[in-house]
Image (tube, rainbow, N blue to C red; front, side, top):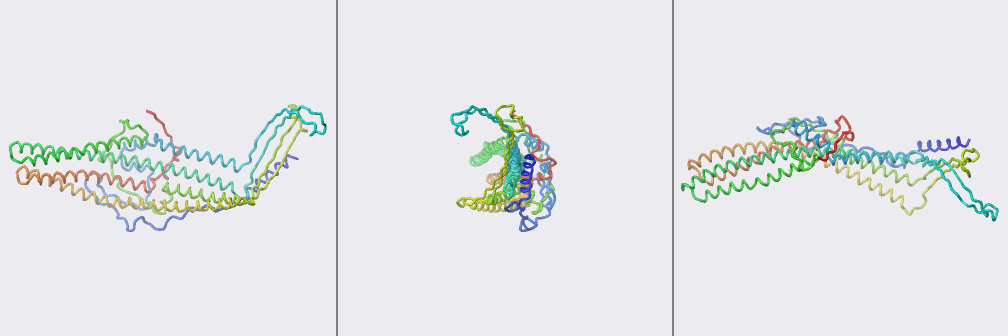
Length: 499
């Protein structure tokens, strides 16, 4: 009979908890911004085209989806291999995965502690000397061994949903950690591709500068012969020597930047900077994607990891308002104890020694000096802050996309101009060199032509690399296509290396 009463008591409490209301706001995903574009004026159907490396026209495809492995559009197997290495060995990605696991286990622990009864088995033994006064027999002080074995059950009835709001908040933390992991993944892959392009650009600038230096050194040999026979003044020789020395002085800076970029690339993929096994990149081996998907603004807010993480923070703040509100209402607790108590081990098996306790408690805050209402106002203020931060994150995301789209359009036009400038400067230099050998132009004209060509030649390499970098920036700004990945990022296998 007592056991049936205990079961009914606990069952009634559980039913009451499940049928109770959850106070506080029910979270709703913010509506996406209005509008169908990212820039004040419409995008062209395609970018301008230029001959040579990274000069192809790119088509804007509004509403098209982004592949999960968007970097494969550059059609570079060394780049694909480098990304695989980064995903397997990057410490930053591993740390983000561990943080997500921590959030999941915290959710599981809190759900178990808040939503289910606590059941504990307890055994206790004590040797004691009793007081005869308390027993009603002064002078009689027996020594006793008291043994008991009990099962204790306690449960906080979640009538007003405070516990459920806390669980909701912990689930939002899991969502936040998951989207932070996706953001880390996107940043890592984008950084690897951008750094590889930077290496290719520096390698191209270094090669272009070496080509210019070689041509200037050949011209210096001609000037030295002319000076040796007295055909030109010493000033002309010194000017040409200065030009050669100036061009040569730029090489160490480019070599330093190239070395630092290689070190950065190694660290990004989880390798030490001393690793010399990483592939080398050149602009000629990186293909410019010809089709560029442009996500609709209404879809961007569901695809950018930073926006989704900010939404999860807003959700958590909403749940905390519910927790603070529930604290203003009565807190109901149930407890029960069942066991046996005896003076010897054999007595614990005797049903006559059974003991039990049933209890219930209700706590209604009456006066806390304004603590609970202040905590609720603080939770509401935190929600307002999270809401404003969410809208700011959305605006910045739209700004990223708008900047990337305009950069693609305008840098393509810039490459066309620089390509034409470099071609003209090359022809002008060849003509001036021929005229100089015939004595038809002065040394000043030759030096000017050399300087103009050197500048245009290096600028051309930078402009070619800019188009590749702009493309990476667009894929990153649009979220990187993580939603098309066939398996959750937390489940991607990783290897740790200490080579």
